[in-house]
Every structure is written in structure tokens, then in C-alpha cells.
Image (cartoon, rainbow, N blue to C red; front, side):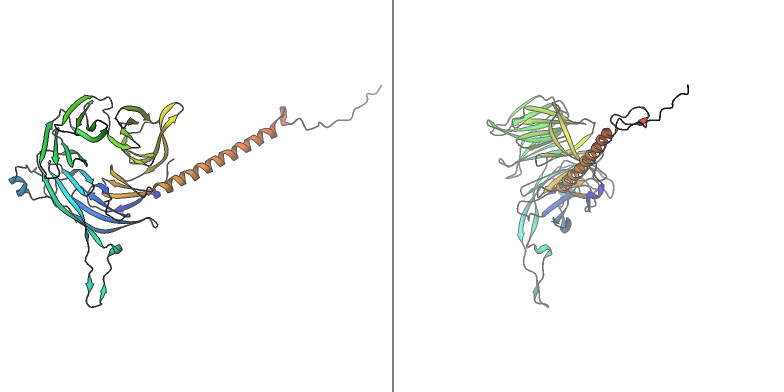
Length: 406
């Protein structure tokens, strides 16, 4: 069901492409940050009762100057005047922010909660109230400058238990960094560009799966040293995105497909839509899924068996934004925030939309029922009608008999 666009609220925020939305564990429940590809961070407060967003503060994650990088043998690309070197991949995990740039540079920022000092106004003798009564602020400090890549960073993955950062670039080089000291532990070259990295935890150990444009996947066992490598043919190489949820992995394929794998990454099912849709981005929403297509339509979906076929059942459809979606974030299991390449943040109340769809479907059912009842009554009324439109119940008027004269 296509819903009107007035169900979407827009927040004009950054001056450049918004690439990430996140909530830190130590932040208030209704606070989150947004990040753009120029390194700007804006912190927001969300009032779920009024469904309003207010900006709290903004800052910039500064990139080291070119002289420092060149002295450490990092090549700086030539860019037009007034332009900037963009962040092509970002990752926020726990209290780390990882930034991968289009020239291969990786910056690691440490985020810490800092208590605020009470500001005192000597003239009035009153404490100045902080915005939203927030008595702390988020402190961002440059933790590591990671060198080694020479072209665009295409994927970043943080292995929490081992404190490893795994990175991949356009040159098909993969590096593993130790986040305790920032040193590069491993460096290897593949035959294809890595588009996504995911962790699979088996009973035998932890494995990293690398998704490539080529029809195979590379598996790396990182549970013990030395790290072991294995690659094999992977049928579902059309994956644009992979998400993990409900002890399953879901790979968003080209056009109309979603492939399901178990927690051991064995294939389970492939789901598809009846109509052809060019899928672009997917995220999980409880037991359901939200899928965006290349025309910026958001669909709330369920993967289920319909008439003995594995189908993607479309619950609702809604137009969001003017450009591609980079990232989504769900707050309170109700509100979906969307980071877009058109520099805006959009948010929708999914539960309210589901209620609206339910009410509309019920109205349609009642209208159809009323129409069916009227048709049934009309049929009953018209039963037994013969030629000329007269019913059986109608009696013909008897004419008087005329006696013939003898």
C-alpha cells in the first residue's frame, strides 16, 4: 500500500552527504549523532511525544594536515580547489569511530563521556541551564592514524573480542590492525574488490567472510594464530548488503532477491517479490525488514511462504528523500531515522504507519463486504425474473371473456 509522503519528516542537517547515524551506549536514550562525509558530527535530541528533533551541538573530526601525512609516506591526491577528500566508509563500534577516506587513509577516533562543569553567572547568581539539562558532553580525540592503503576504502569491520580492525580498499588489499597499539598485523592481496566483511562465530572458531564482486567468498579463521585462509565458490555473489538477525544472515541480492543463511552460513532460502524491484538497501525492523529501492521507495516487508513459494510480502510503501540511502537507525523500536546522500535526515514512525495501513485495509474490507452484500441482495431480488423483466410473484391481470354471437 502506497502511503502519502506527508508521513515522512525531514531534518535539513549537514551541508554534505550524511553517511552514518548512531547512538552511543553511554548517551541518553533519546540522543544520537549523525556523521557526514566531510567529518562533521551533529548531536541530536529526539522528543518522541512531539516527534521533534533538536540539535544539541556539532563538531568536526579533523583530518591531519597534508604535510604530516606526506612525511609518513602517504600520497595525497590532487583535488579541485574548494573540494575535499571524502570519507567513503565509516564504522562506529562501542566508543570508536573509524573513518576510511577515498585516498586510503584511516582515522580512529576515541569517544568519551565528559562531565560538564556548572557555569555560574556572577551577576545574577544563578546556574545557567544547559540545553536539555544535559550535564555531560561527548569528547572526540584522535586515537590512531592508520596508513598502508593507497586508494578508496571500501569496507571496515571491527572484531570486538580480539580488538582488531579489518580494512579493505579499491586496490584489493586487506589489512588487519591491532587497536591496542595501531600496528598492522596482516597484509594480503586478493583478486577482487571487497564490498562487505562479516563475522561468523562457529563452535570451531571465529571466521571472517569477505564478499567480493567475483563469484567466491574468502573465509579467514581469526580465532587463533597463525590466521588461516580459505576461499571457495560462492553462488550468491550478487549480494549488495548483508545483515545479521534472528540467528540468521540475510543477503540483499540484485533486483528482487533476498537470500537467507543460517548462523553457520549455510544456504536456507531465497525470497523474491512478484514485481521486479531494483533493491538498494536493507535493514531489520523487529521480525520484519525495511527495504529501499533505487527509486527511494521504502517498503516494510515480511519474508514468508505464500502459496508454497518463498515470497517477500510488501506491507507498506513510502517515498523517502531524493537520493540514495546510506544508513538507517531505529530508535525505541518504533522510529526509523534515515541518512541520505541529499544531505538530509528523514524519520518516520513505523508503528503509526502500520496502524494506518491496518485501518485502511479494514476500511477496504468493509467496503468490499458492503458491496458484496448489495450484490447478493440485488441477485436475490432479481431471482425468477423472466422475459420482459416480470417476476414470478407478479400475477397477470385476467381479461373478461367475450361471448361470440351465434
